[in-house]
Amino acid sequence: MTNQYSIVHVPPSGTTQYVQHAWIASLNQLCVGHIHLQVEPDQRIKFLDAWVHPDYRRQGIFRKLWDMRWEYVKQNYNGWKAYAWAKPMSLPLLIEKGFEEGDTCVYVEKDIEGETPFTFVSC
Image (cartoon, rainbow, N blue to C red; front, side, top):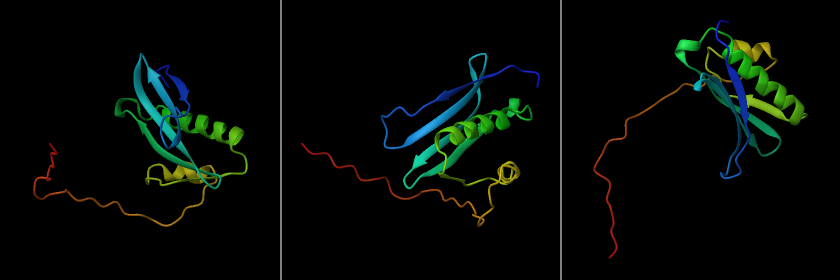
């Protein structure tokens, strides 16, 4: 890797209903990648939202973020279950780390169209 980036762990703020951790990779004060986890009931950890800026991909940033999050999870959530909804590009790393592949999901979307929403004003 040619660029020297730093990674910081951002713990939950305690100001939202979700308990989420983030790891942010930066270079010269520019966010070049991030990865998150969410703590859920019943001793479950949901891995979510991993991203690396297109200009900084293929430099090991995603793997470094993933490894830092995984070390944190192993140290703080021993005995819990971790899971993720993975894109095909991320699946090989998850399988390499011992995750088992489940069912396949298909993304769908629809533009929301219709009348202008009704606005009620009380005087």
